[in-house]
Length: 196
Image (tube, rainbow, N blue to C red; front, side, top):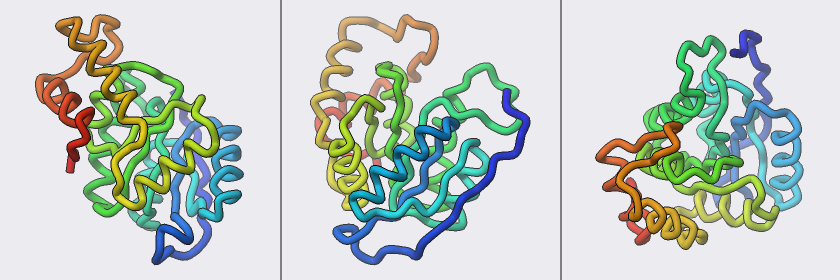
């Protein structure tokens, strides 16, 4: 559980054309990841307009900065976390971001290749789910596709997960059981339909 207040970092002005520059907020509790993502984004002429290491600070950045895209790690703590479900808060945050900044698209960027997490993130309104092992070019492509409203290029990953889930009745790892709605939404997203 984290008790220290995180520092917010702000920069830049809103981009009018996604082909020129995308405004990005990064929400990840690892500073080295935030720094790496900043380098990757800036090398592609995109702007990191804010960084946060807690969910509360991330939501505040989205409220004030109205970014084009949020890169969100799925396991980021709250400042005063009371829930043992570390990922649950990130899924809730996706919905909250859609309320405070409806035009912002969320790309989950995580190390967890978990079908239940993918389904929960997409059902909550995430635009894409990308693993941290993805190349820099793949991450930039996910950012630009999200900003432009294009479907994820890695839809085959979503189809693979749907196939894995079809062979079992429920997510059996106990870490992220799917709701009935999430089980309905995931196959539709894998077929390229929007969750908006």
